[in-house]
Image (cartoon, rainbow, N blue to C red):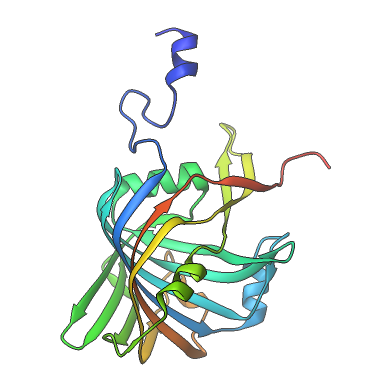
Length: 247
């Protein structure tokens, strides 16, 4: 294998058998339980990387089931998104993500900089309740519940909200342990078809854990709870800010 072969064919690790295929990635029947809650603004300010700015002192806690995703198969995900702005543009800063499938963990971290760790999330219907859970090292760290399909929502409004930008802090270390890549990445979902969206009563319980610290952003008040089923495409991202560039 020549140097030119490597330059031409290098995409992801391992080179001879990458952990995931090239994007973009299509998701069918992606299902969300999103619980928006109020938390301590001082804690949020300490976590949000500049030049992002806090939009409001809330967190969107998400449980997501993805039964049909390009190259990734069927997996579940759970994490926290913080409403922010960048140069006046509203979006969400992805603060934490836990999921149970290696290819999307590897792709998410290497391509966009998603803060993904291995965990054991689940989203399912239990009788009259939509229930999301997250276990880490056999310990329950998050439980979210919602009354199943109590009130239908406007699908166009929901689709528009899903198309807003998301921001990620991507860090790739050099061989000496210093940061070789340190940048703010931006992306937005495309080709969104909302198949159903509902609201209902909701509750969220977060528990302390040293390695899955979702409870570090405590629940002061649940503001809204939404259940969404949609098809969508996750495109590749763009660099919104390079922390290592000379200024």
